[in-house]
Image 1 (cartoon, helix red, strand yellow):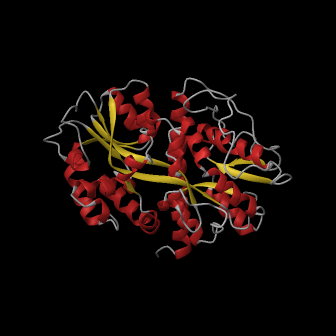
Image 2 (cartoon, rainbow, N blue to C red):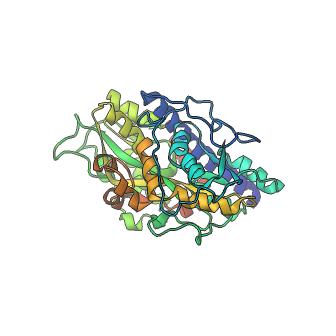
Image 3 (cartoon, one colour):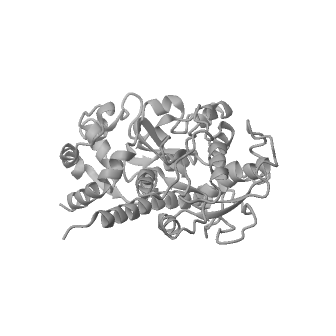
Length: 405
């Protein structure tokens, strides 16, 4: 007997959450290992109740790109000049722990408390807890940093409040991350990365068709052991116009993958793998997360990013259905997406700002390393989260069968 709609929805929710948590935690572990200066930051709020006082992570905290533990990164934010605004109120904000949540604390949480009088306690993201809280009517969280691929699923199943766009100012936000139940928090991208001692000058891969061209670009390759991003890259390699990429033609994608399968020496599962494989010279080009490649580049590895046809994905701020502090939560999301705060976050950890004006606050060298820099973003493709919300289960089953053939 097949799965019921409810069973399939639960399965999809778990799969989405597992993917989001795996990607985030792998990235955080790598960032913490790669960062020379570690700093333990104090918790926000009073740490009472069920919210964790250390961001819910057992990992050593890190400031990301630099040790700025004593520096006030965000002194002022336009529109936030009343430190009594939310005095006496407290919200619980959940995120992914580790270096990412430490950076959010410095760039967003602490400035919000200082500039509004609100207290913030922290917990770590988990869609299972989200569902349990909403269904029990005992909602402890107020703001949740969710993988954007899960937002439509959570919203369609009644787990999220609709975003109040009378409070959240969208004037300078990228429109592709404005959803009924969520607002973008950060961008990151899966890109084509390659060794610069193997390909250089006029002989560098310009996109996924070149990745598939083993005659013009000989060498070992690595791709993500997952349908997400891999199916898109297969279609781009087969000549599909980026503007016509969705809905994905899965039959065509798997035929394209058949052509490259033997050239892929490593199907990577952990986000650290492609960066390490490239650094060690075990492969010559790979799909990889931009933050991982950025880190090894800063350490002197002979690798580069081809931003053309990169695939952008994101995290989003959402509010659990039944939040007792919805008014403060919406104002927090507005604050977290201002140019001042999104720029401060990017200075601590290499994720792309969702506010276009954030780049007015960033130097050019850093801006050109971030996936949402306006020119870089134009050369990339934003993941169609709605398509994946509907098709992830089927695509995963089909990909897992194909990889074993």
